[in-house]
Length: 119
Ligand SMILES: [Fe+2]
Image (cartoon, rainbow, N blue to C red; front, side, top):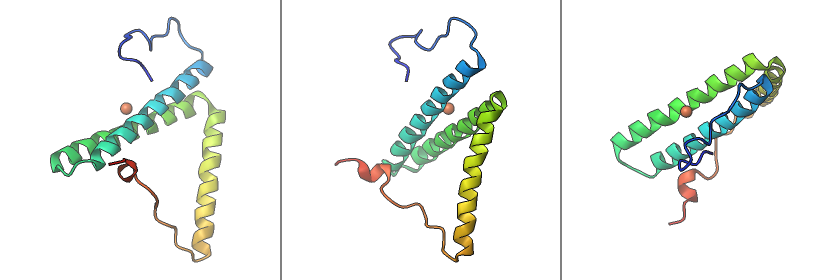
């Protein structure tokens, strides 16, 4: 992640190849994930309704940015797009098997960011 003490850290001195741009986009996605993690942590840490609404809205915008970046990656590298779709297909297949077996899809469970914070 960039250091705000160095305003030139993220600059690239030349045009990137598509392969280099794909690497940069992966880093950009990591930044979006970090932002989502932090906004969600702050959302969970307050009961103020205005703060919760604003933080949730920003968090969800970051999620949309991930969708934009992944769509751009699919455009730049069709092979990577195939792999994304392979993974999507594998999960859909598993979910379908669970439905056919009559087993309910388990809800997301486990610790949340909020209950991992030591008080
Ligand atoms: Fe973002």
